[in-house]
Image 1 (cartoon, chains in turn yellow, blue):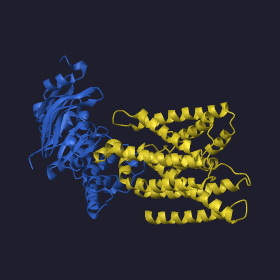
Image 2 (image 1 turned 135 degrees about the horizontal axis):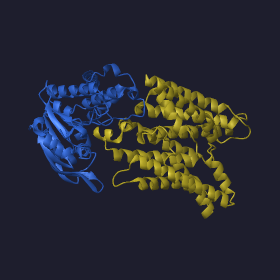
Image 3 (image 1 turned 120 degrees about the vertical axis):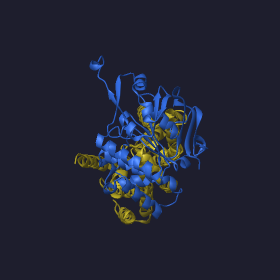
Length: 310
Length: 266
């Protein structure tokens, strides 16, 4: 049953990708085709990666509102890029300081939350929220205090878009998502058990601290890589896992892959919209995903509340 | 196999720098139904947490089937013991059957698949706990009593030799309480399952347990058959309140009645 649904979703992804390839403000030439293809590939990597990371974060934190950015990776990446430009006059490859910043912030958040050998998820969530706020304020401070025009580009990039200015980024994103998602799937039973609670998982013989550390590190590396490549694309990691649960249920064996495919479809279509709605101008895809995702999330919230009241 | 399943020697355990369990010794024989009783803060739940590897002890030893529990791999311990907590809050919409089949995790090799045997055991446990008709409902839509039966089914799907329960019925009314304890008692009698249950309700403990361990301030105050532990002097000393101990006219087990302050002079 779940297999059939997943197969249908893969078909839907193929159709969406084909549609995204031909939709656009200009007629198809070889260069345009290549450009759109690389955007579609980046969209698939980012959508699949963010959605599957979202599912993993929600299970590990046992919080349906968790998403890949919740522990501060995104604002860390933003701050990394902005600091490199504002303080060191860096004008090179921005994803590099961004990736470094994202990982440093995760390392900081994880260590701030550690109590002896354990990392309680409530502390982790709170440290993530606080670090997010501090980093965001610093980003705004440096952008407003410095007159460096490169920072304007950084701002644009922070809003999230799938413009490919370097094809190495597409490869790196595909590699991060492509290597990480199978690992998440290998841990699907552990994720099911941790969804019940950490002590419950421990009673089932699962070494929760090891599993948590491994999955947080992998999910953070994927998220940092994707934020560095395409900026902050909101709501994918929050909503798509919920859509996937509505389709195949909460068991992670089917959930992870379903979320990944749905995320890919969502971003490929959102990017096609971002390119065409206000042509020839382009809207940052992060704005599209938030505008589509926000109302959908409210709808989900109301729907689940109605179920609870029955 | 020796008749002893669990042996606890001079166990000390607690949180960061506060010891809660302060030197506890006891042993449990196969098939016994043990009740752990005592006032709030006596260390009952902490004891269960130390026996189920949630807490590492600061001193002393626990041996399970003759092996040092805290040197065992977690997955090995999960093949022998299962734990039922007070309540399990589940955020996502898992089916009851999905939850019960999680109990098979310790038996399935990493990357392995569920076998027909695993599925059969899950069905058996649903049957034993009378949760078969709930199997295709969402766990987060059940009542507290139904949910607890499903969680017990999950614990049984682990095929444990030792089942530990931490106040499993404190959120349930008297009919659900007896239903759950009748179930556990029959498993203990018919399948030789060893049971250690933390209980608040002294009368429930008296009716169902072969042996009671009364804890006070992190130590064992007294242990023995219910009639050896539940006398008014012992209870008044440990709980610091006035009680009268009578007998359940049907079972003959001791029954503890509280005495309100206004009537204590009589």
